[in-house]
Structures are given as structure tokens and as C-alpha cells.
Image 1 (spheres, rainbow, N blue to C red):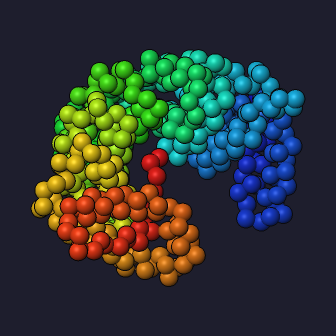
Image 2 (image 1 turned 180 degrees about the vertical axis):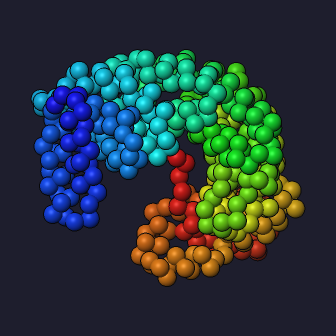
Image 3 (image 1 turned 30 degrees about the vertical axis):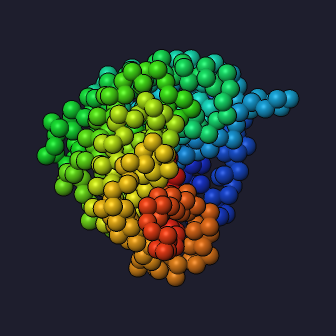
Length: 415
């Protein structure tokens, strides 16, 4: 297929037909696209449509089609024919980052996913300049572009949380740290400063806090396998700012929605995750910062409401305290009788409540509710039990423990 106006027009017409609700029109169009996707230049025609089309619906459709095409065809399977010719692969990698960063957010997310799929197969050996191109975009000052880079980096690096240790993995992470850790830290500091500068600008704060959430997720991914020397050397910068953000309460970022977590809740819950990671895996290095985080996260727990939007925050805060209280050398932080009473009254008992939202979820789909409870709440139940055990270990023997709560709403993992 040539990169011609005629082919672009044909592709546009068939993409439109794939959106038609009439199956007699939609299915032949889908079959046609499947029949031509093996031709050279097909993915480049999709990218050209993304860049040049004036119809936003077609651009979104092309971005989804491109992402799915990459998902199906990019991986090279041994003893099977290459589904994408080498010239197309080179052209895609040369153009996709720029196109992704210059696209609207809806399209940007699709292309970011495509970059992540390509990156899992080709980065770093077959795509060595990807990181450099991404890091250079931090200098743009445009947070639409910066957030696109951060979102793509998060998609690329979050697999470090789950990969088995290997020399190949260590080599890749070292390469990423050498190129990405310092620019990420500088961006973190600059974004914090901009939050202070624009403290009264709700629109600016929403963009900046979206960046901080992604930066915090990247911190978690880059620190998961081991404590990098760079982050150990710069721990004060990160932890002081994390602590400041935990205690921040800007009314402009508060939402009236009782179901959907806002940016402030998402950021604080991710910081709780980051603190729990350091408390569990790097407690010697983290020890001097830990009392401040215990106090801040404890205050969060006892002042946060029972609305559904706080579930993720409460879950991660409890997991942090549970990870701390089970370690003998932090036992003194939980020995005070008033602290134990507060744990019982303000954390354990309130989180045993079966809320109206839980009842509604059960009534809407009882099987799904039970499945989520069985599959997703184990971590938080364990965390509650650890807090109870810590509490009960200081009580007289004739005082019975409290049953573990139903934690259906805590079906969350760090993303």
C-alpha cells in the first residue's frame, strides 16, 4: 500500500464503516481492514491519518485501530513470519513519540499504550534512543507533553514491580536510572514549586497533581526491585516532599463526588504505598523518616471520612501502618495506651461498618461483590488483623479481640 491520498481516503471510509451499528456494514469493513493490515505501509497510513485528519472521530478510531494492530502483530515469534516489515518498524519508532505527545489526551493514551507494547519487545536493545527522546521532552515546560511522557514511562516501567530478578533486568533498570532518575527528581521538585506558585489556580493544580501522581507511581516502580544508589542519596528530597504532600489539604482539589477518588486522594494513597515499600524493604535507610510518616498517615486515617472515594487511601494507609507495627524495633510507636485505643475506635471499628454503598453494590450484583471480597480484600484484611494483633498484644488476657472486618471495598492494588 502506497502512502497516497487515495489510500488515506479509502482507509478513512472503512474506518467510518467500522463504527456503523449495522453489522452488515460494520463486519465487512472490519474484514477488509484485517485483510490489508499485513501490507507494507498500513500502520504508517494509520499514523498519517492521526496526524492529518480533521475528523476527531476518525482520529480516535485510527488510534485504537493502530494500538490493536501493534498488540496483535509487533511481537516477533520464533519460526513464524514477521508480521510487520522492518522498514515500517523503523518508521513507527521514529515518529510515534512525537505524534503521541502532540495529540489530544484521548489519542495520546492510545498511542502511549502502543509505545508500551513496542517498548516491552524492543526497549532497550532495539530502541536505545527512546529514553533520551522522552527525557528531552521534560524541558518543554508543557505539562500536556510532560504528562504524556510520564504516562508512557509508567506503562513501560511498572513491569519492574513484577519481573523476576535477572542480570538482564538489572542491566535495563540501571540504564533507565542513569537516564531517568535525575530528570525525574528535578521535575518532581519543579512541580512541587509550581504547586505553591499556583496554589489558588484550580485548573493549574489539577494538571500539576496529575503529574505528581504519575511521578509517584514511577518512584514506586524504579525503587521496587532494590534501593537504587541515586534514590538513597536523594532520599531527603523525595521523603520531605512526600511528607509535605501527605499533610497538604487544598480545598480547590476537594471534590463533591462521594464515589470517585479525587487527585488529592489518589496522590496521598500512592505516597502511602511508597512509604510502605520503604518501610518493608529499606527500613534501615528509611528509619529516620518513619516516625514522621507514621504520624502523618495516622492523622490521615483518623480524619478521613467513610465515603467510597477514600477507600483506596484508607486501604494503603492501613497497609503502611500494618507493615510498621509488625516490626519489633518499631513496637514503641504503638505501645502508648491512647494510641491503642485510637486504633480500636478510629480505625478498626469504623472499617467494620457495612456501608450503604456496600449494600447497594451487593444488591446490584451479589456474585461480583462476593468475588471481589474473596479475591481482592485479603491484603487489607491481613493489615487490619496485624493492627488488631498489635493492639491485643498490649491488652489484658480477658479482653477478646475484634473480628476482622468485611473489606470488600478494598479491592485495589497500586497501579
